[in-house]
Image 1 (cartoon, rainbow, N blue to C red):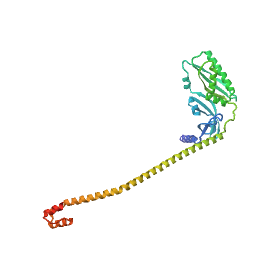
Image 2: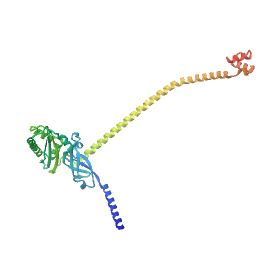
Image 3: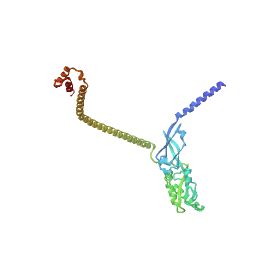
Image 4: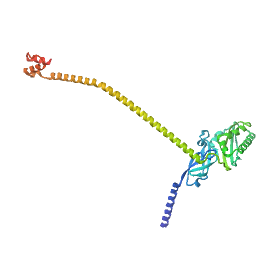
Length: 329
């Protein structure tokens, strides 16, 4: 039993290592919107082990993230991966829907709500399910609702029958289809809002090769990226040049200030030297006076006093007291 348990544990460890190693085999794919009318727009990324692993995967995003329209942040778009080319995952637009909380905010107590579900076929054979939502200014009778609903169906069938699926996507997202419905039904009863709250692709039709190819999109993206890098490099070089110019200006100003300081110091040096000489003379004179005041003449002999008087050029006649007074003058 112990050998069997060891064998099973070894198999479990090998399986665990194999399971952990699967992550290394995965790679990132760039999700791109349909070729027409969205020109293979980059809408996100996904990870998968192989091309088959991501086929059929649904990717959702808001319309604001898709085209930057912040008034449509409540609209969710759905794309399904249908093909892969290298690291690019190509998709098909499979529908959209409005968020539930936004729809609830549109409905109030004294307003009328008209909801409907309609399956229509486009000119190129796509079967699409459309769910319009109409909000009236006030509550309306059932007969008015039926008239508005019937008119809405006629408008949708006539509009979609003359439109391709690619053009229908644009009409549903930019509001032109909703405006067409509102213009047709306003003669029956004034409406507060008309929206296509949900659409769903039920069956694909004939696809047409329109718009730029994937290689052209890659070349355009590379060109834009190169332009962005060039602009960043130019801005960085300009900033560095400005910093160097500011540094040179500061150095010139410092040099001018140093020259002015040196000139001022040169002018002040003679005056300072003269002041120093005067101070030195005064100190020597005061030292001599102090030294003369500190000498004890009374302890000297008359001969020594006379020698000091001779050195000072003073008369040497008189008594000792007179000689001392003469030296102290």
